[in-house]
Image (cartoon, rainbow, N blue to C red; front, top):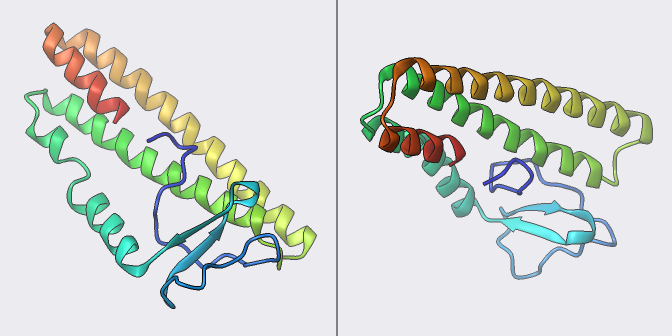
Length: 155
């Protein structure tokens, strides 16, 4: 999943304005996220719980189960965490952009703050990918291990 896709993370309810009708059949505890022209995303409490459980429990089991050196595993776990943070920040930015209740100066300040955080984490992601690339060269992985590393880094 790329950082630009909208993951199902727990989030504060977004404003439901006239251009974003809230589904009448959605559970009362559902979170409604206005995605602007793309429509409205509704996430139930069960969906949020499932997403949280998957993110916490199974987040790096495939990395741990691989036969890769510990140094590589550590960088891969770091990359996964950076990706999760980026996905949450992008979702928060989308919510801030769609918030019709916020006053313009506050809304703009929040969007700029989130954009700065996204830039910072993107830089950290680039640095982590460079570190992974260097480690792959120095450790002397065989071709199967290199393929596994790339697959896990992109997941």
